[in-house]
Image 1 (tube, rainbow, N blue to C red):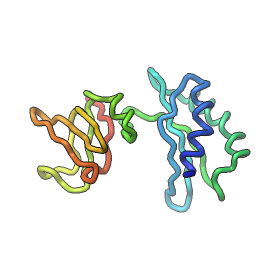
Image 2 (cartoon, one colour; image 1 turned 180 degrees about the vertical axis):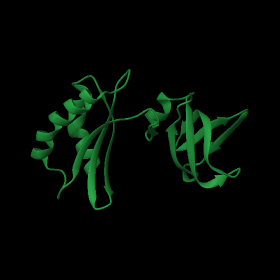
Image 3 (cartoon, rainbow, N blue to C red; image 1 turned 90 degrees about the vertical axis):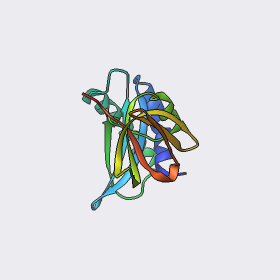
Image 4 (cartoon, one colour; image 1 turned 60 degrees about the horizontal axis):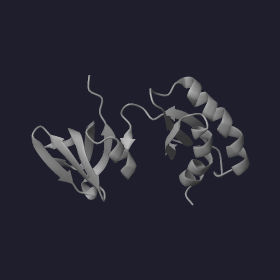
Length: 150
């Protein structure tokens, strides 16, 4: 089982017991250091107290389960307003929302497209740009994230 899946299984009940949602778990190397990050969310947004409460509750659980060999930094963060959509449920939850689609290769001269999310099926992302509806294959899309409009 992947580290992120193990940590998600440990974290989910802790996060949900505090009225929060576990959005994502990330284990990444940045420079010489490794980071384990939990991204949490709740209606109305997450604050520093939410992050601290989850961090304090998870510390002894991670120490006991010891899912990662070696040292790492543990962080609990808000999923953020411009969060990346990864799972089918993420896409369903935000249908009709403004998004930025990042592509591997330019489309119409652009690699980042501001659009409105219209659909998601089997990895294919359908968006509306102006009056045009476009479906991108999974192999074309590097990532899709929410876009905040002011």
